[in-house]
Amino acid sequence: MINSEIEKFARAITIAEGWLPDKESRSFRNHNPGALRSSPIAIGQRNGFAYFLDDSVGFVALCWDLAMKCRGLTKTGLKPLDSIEDLIKVYTAEQDLEKLDNYIKIIERITGKNRTTKLEYFQ
Image (cartoon, rainbow, N blue to C red; front, side, top):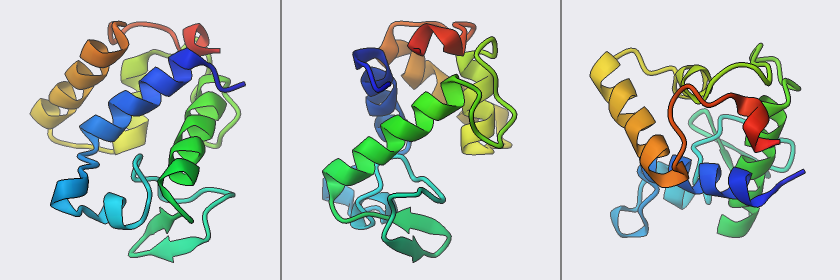
């Protein structure tokens, strides 16, 4: 279910989300590299975001979340034939088009896939 492509996608999201240990961001303090709002394996929520036992559990939660979204198994409405760009628009809820474009460019650079790549690729 969680493969190397999902892991690469998840690592790209951690970078795009600004998960930086030296900055002590909220996602870092919450052991939540994907800035997930909720997760079935979270141990709670702080200020509207999930928090996890440790960083590795938070990363697994992010991978699982992405795998479910790529398979169309979440309430987001995403389906396997949707694109990376569609997923990122849902994932970030970013309204600023320039910030959204920069986020997507990070994902493209790290995954080596372009914004039109279908989510089914990651299955």
